[in-house]
Image (cartoon, rainbow, N blue to C red):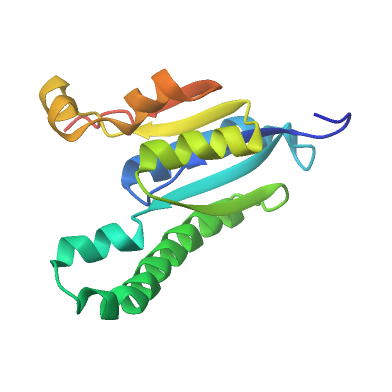
Length: 164
């Protein structure tokens, strides 16, 4: 890293309440207290499904190729909507400088680890969905995977449970 160049902090963002909380938590603790002299360049990454796998889910057949442009357009629109939400959160907290939005394609676990490697990130921040051991085993855990495979520090932000 060149002198004066900021370290990169990657935040995984999927628009869920857990990722929204993790982004807000990160902004409140790592960006806002420093004013315009942010210690990090913030990279917000949304991982979207690859077009080919989305079409394969629709079913086999030669006609599936006809759907590729439509599916690609829909997936990109969804990604744009999610990242617009992240951008609005940053703007609401007056954090606009040193923020980059990026769409990764494919499995979120792989897309986030690839973004870490590509940008030589110092830290990866992820929200925790709070799955128990059984759900984590069945569904898989993005944060657990990244904690073991990302080539940087990984911070998993847990949203506090609300008391009724």
